[in-house]
Length: 287
Image (cartoon, rainbow, N blue to C red; front, side, top):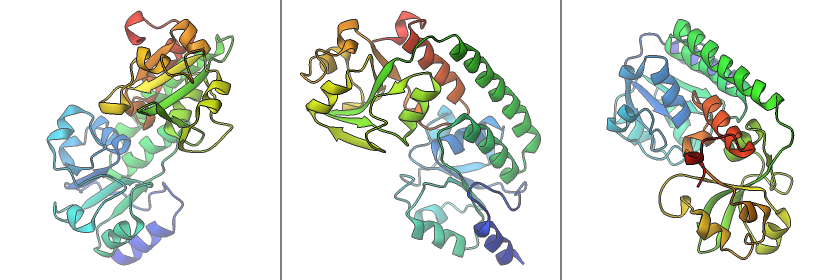
């Protein structure tokens, strides 16, 4: 019977939940937005391990780390003794997830997408998976209200700033965001126009000619460490961007890396970025 239920779960559309597991007390959460949502639903005490991308809330960092979500090993996950695994559907490799399912551990995959609908749907899906439907309904209403406030702000916007998102600066070689990325999703949600979205999907190192032609109004980077944290003077000193409108106006904005993950704080991140893009954010949000 149990194996039949697992087979049914595999046959359902991505993100669908065949059965909830309200009695699960040893949950492995894989993917920052998944982990954050479980904690936001008040079920953090049931999480026994997390992946490397799960860093919020701070309490989660004290849990065992099973590794990067796209380089998981079945042995590492099973070693913590889970009775439920809730994961983003971009986790992998696929053979690892197959091995976990073969071990008769329930695996609930949550669809990885970059829209407000996905954020809200995933709250409901995760709530159903862990038997926290009432908490999910409450959180859903709260986040929906935040998105409504964002929509009201966007309705007053008169133009779309052209935005270049730089993932990393590798000795002057810029890895930038195209379409189908969390960066593109949060830029569009915040009322910006990702200058590289028409050119390619994913992240790509771009040459100087393409960057000059892009002529962004605003540069966006993540806060963080090493080459993932850029400083305005370093970026604007690069020949490809020195003459850009962004450099001329000193428009450089930093965002929390979690803004690219699309979880419970997405509406807040998007509102903050929107205010920075249209010039209504407090000065400390700008570099």
